[in-house]
Length: 563
Image (cartoon, rainbow, N blue to C red):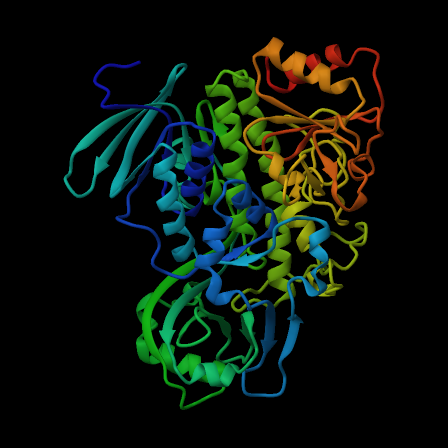
């Protein structure tokens, strides 16, 4: 450790927006002390980034904050569809899709559901939880510089209120410092992708009359396409508070100063189709849609997450969800290395897993912006399928409920795969984001959901609920894997939960509703499935093996860089 260090922490998080706070949450759930620095004085005040997909809600479920987030999002709980039309008062509206999950078919894939919770509502929830989990949150604190050596990272931070400088020594640094990431720039990490896609000005406003114009159309967003007044309308409370995204064209010489209150009011009235609409502008904020992915996700002991690692079009709400899932991936790996369960080589799998996911997801997001004719977006005239797949790709069936234009969204949200990284037996040639939603226990995919009951449990629990702080081995109650798993865990000094599933007296868990765990997980009663702390299948043995203890020992030492 270097001299004159004011603070020492295992992990320093730079950036206290949504992804930084989620990194804090997930590290805290693993018992890892950390410091978070954020240059702004508080969390976001502007409604944005509110679409939380099913996979992210699973992560919040396991982290025990799902209920609090749904409470914060309760005002929009009945908003589901995406509407498009020339205005709200004409007769040309069309539902791009009316329900996120019509018929509730998503329940066969997950115990969780989609949620609308704006960033300004979810961040206070996270801030109230993370300090109880060992987080040292420091807002109004800016990272000035950092350098790293083989033993750690030394950072200089400044309290923007007092001007005081402090030196922080950390074992690792996670940069969640936004699309213009100073950390990424300091590391000289380049970016690939299409670059800027379009620019909008987000206008918050109050209107009592608008709720009467909208009526019972409970949309997530309405794309208004009138040529001289296009934009996207989003409800904040379905009553008086609204957001309108107006196209901004700086390439044509437009400046933010051009968006006067008078211009914004008139634009919103024309877009809605109500010339006498009461509009009180309460705020304006520019935002930029882009498709960029960092060429590297890590240099030494410094890791990128969220917008510092990738930017993508907002259509589909893929960006923030991908960032939160970055945070979840790096958190369990940092925890495993810091608590001695894994060697440092495990951290190299972060980039191997998350970078391909970001590239595939950003391409899908841009394709959906083109499909939905997002205001301000003028894509290159290249043919794309509805899901954003290249021509000739395997066709994607309609998602749960059959909403054709939603094709591929569920695959992007939770069907993505890790073909390389901390997995064994994954097919490296399969697409990272498949065209067909398929979760059946393949190595590198999110482990399947099914309901199970423990002896004496009053309510069933999902397999998803089993995965958070340790590896989990699933096997049949009469298979030798249970004894092998417990023995290997003791030999390696490794936290490993072993669950024998069946209907007999020796079973740890019993399938609810007569389900067959082996069929769901793509194995046999003689096989076993090893699931990582993040809920992804690390390895699977479809059949019995001669020496399960030796096989499991080799698998775990390889996955965790313990050899």
